[in-house]
Image (cartoon, rainbow, N blue to C red; front, top):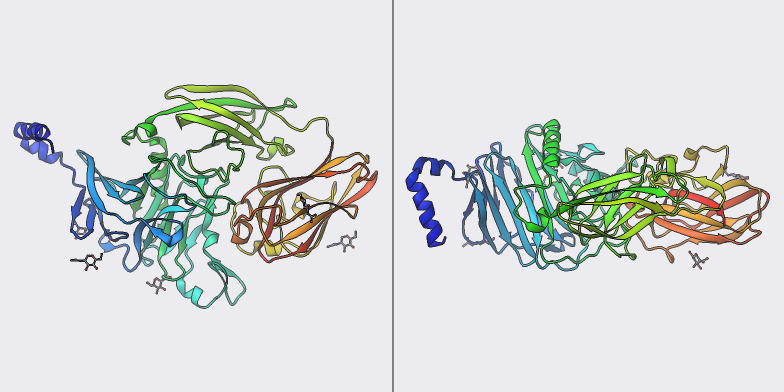
Length: 565
Ligand SMILES: *[C@@H]1O[C@H](CO)[C@@H](O)[C@H](O)[C@H]1NC(C)=O
Ligand SMILES: *[C@@H]1O[C@H](CO)[C@@H](O)[C@H](O)[C@H]1NC(C)=O
Ligand SMILES: *[C@@H]1O[C@H](CO)[C@@H](O)[C@H](O)[C@H]1NC(C)=O
Ligand SMILES: *[C@@H]1O[C@H](CO)[C@@H](O)[C@H](O)[C@H]1NC(C)=O
Ligand SMILES: *[C@@H]1O[C@H](CO)[C@@H](O)[C@H](O)[C@H]1NC(C)=O
């Protein structure tokens, strides 16, 4: 402490000793030596050592127990951050900010005296180029028997069930009754989360991540959220701040100063209603005014209206503000900067507030509904967001294919399997569901329902589309896949003549289909020309003939269609 500051404090203390003592925060950091610290407040505390924080004391018991506790790691379990020092770097009358330093960057816990839990954030200094970067709690499995996300709630499968089952794939076991155990069934779309975590009768431990601009990926970025640790039985609550799951490319390098968070790690008595109320409170307080970080506080907003080149509004379109001039990475695979998402309204209008200042590209794609026929996407670079300003993009024209005739289309263009058979959009992750799709099927355009086309294709066999055409003109076959895991190949045959294929040679692998993604993984668009005379006047048949099958691998269907050119 500087001499001046000490004098000032001394003077204050002299002026009003009782008042000054009352203003000292009750939250604390205690250095026990040997790289061990205790931090917390009168409600909870935890003991942090070089890597792991354990002995989480809350409501009269140790809530980590024999589990591993809290840590920060990258590239799987390969690299846990090791804390070399800890200090209270800032404080107010009822809060402290504790910084833990590692070679890669600094992890902060902002602890308010009356808060069960802490705000946490990480500031990068020297992280390597990486795929996975996460913080997590591995907690006592008696206190926290259940998991919760926005799409799944219930008991985490007990460890004993794993012992009696056969391992059939990474982190996947088949039980004697033929059903499966896999942590991936606890995945969810990250940006749809409100509160999620693990809970029991007395206690709940939750992650509440308002804003979400520090996450990688777009609206359909899936991640593993909670699970049972299959070796130890720990109840695991993940905070995948840069995840690799369900996408094709995820390696990124980060600028010095990139911030993940702050998010809230929140403890309560296990009440989901209370956690939901806390989510509302945090979401409305975002971006946090208390966070003393200049780039974080420097934000503007934008608005615009997307109109299709045929005059229709881009009703309900997915809108993504992402990397400027990045034609190589899909919106799902972008991840080194900050990202913002929304959906246009029925008039094609959209707005996003509290965007970090900078230059972005705006991306948009159809999300079904009134524009389910639109197979093109929209990109506009060089969108500048200025502090405290509104960037009004006014009307943006989204080119759709025009002057063409659609001969048939199965499924909406929305980058999702919604509408097809077997899948239920409210259950977006379910291992082995793809095995319920048939090897062979016939679909007749005009009389078959969309639900007669199955959501995913994996097995050797032929799915035939029977359709009528009144032309022999040149055409284009468009295949839109909502996901693809290598190992399955097909030929696309128009009236027995090969016009295209789906193979591992032409498509990178994404770990989506085989890890139980049934709504969406990494989207792919394939376009194949059909020469004049390929179509016949009258009855035609397009076969999707799988020549190489592989259980659980293959593709998720978004849409398949044909246009004349
Ligand atoms: C310091 O901590 C390590 C483990 O973190 C332990 O093995 C060692 O015994 C401790 N040393 C002292 C002097 O407490
Ligand atoms: C942590 O909490 C436990 C249980 O409430 C308490 O006994 C212990 O003294 C606390 N630790 C510190 C350093 O305050
Ligand atoms: C909890 O973990 C212990 C090991 O610490 C394990 O023996 C037990 O089976 C686990 N309980 C459940 C419900 O998985
Ligand atoms: C599809 O239709 C063809 C006749 O066009 C028939 O031979 C085949 O058995 C049918 N496949 C299925 C799975 O119904
Ligand atoms: C498969 O399709 C790609 C285009 O997507 C093409 O380049 C390749 O030659 C085709 N392979 C076979 C074996 O037909």
